[in-house]
Length: 312
Image (cartoon, rainbow, N blue to C red):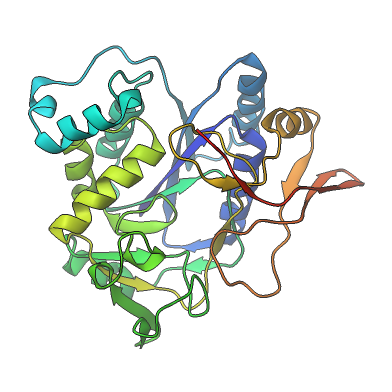
């Protein structure tokens, strides 16, 4: 079994799109989904309440809402020089506002799955996922050294020529490429499968307050130690990310700046969301020209602006 952790904030409609595509396309192995979510007010919580009711009968899917943080960092965590450096560099992580970190660690430790995969709520599966027993055995034989990636492919993300096909999979080592590149970024919250004990080790050792700081801080440390450095990936991506809006305030990313209030209102009104899939997929992150909003026989095609970098 693979434990899938999904992070979500104020985006119930987008999360619904991800969950519908996951249930449709995930074929094997068996999986369970734990969703860690939060909402800024009752309006957005209403969207999540509707979503929780929608998936109430799906025993493999569980929702966990963050709560206010009731403790600061331990002395042991503060005596870690890497943690101390990050706390000094990033004022926002000095006083965590939620229990995101402790909640995540607790959810991981209570589940018996051997492998874990993280996701964010702005993705959508576009093809069936059938992970062979050979891949699961391969991961098990090198739990500290290996990972399996679902979001890349032969013709995506400016694949270097040195990332070549071997035994029906693309194979590479992250440290062979620049850290800031897709093929050099060791730890990702976008559909990379890891040994869970390895991930728990890192999460308990290093501080973070949300998915962005989790990914950035852990990826840097894993690369330094060359953990999970050897990767295999599918020939074609199984999912895509659609950064139509930005809800975090730590890193300035590009997005299409679609109003979360508008999308949540549509979800409360009973609409579902679909993203257009490009004819030729060249990158994991796709900035669509429009969105498809559907309710019964009603189809609304909402055109959206070009992506722009959001300031934080």
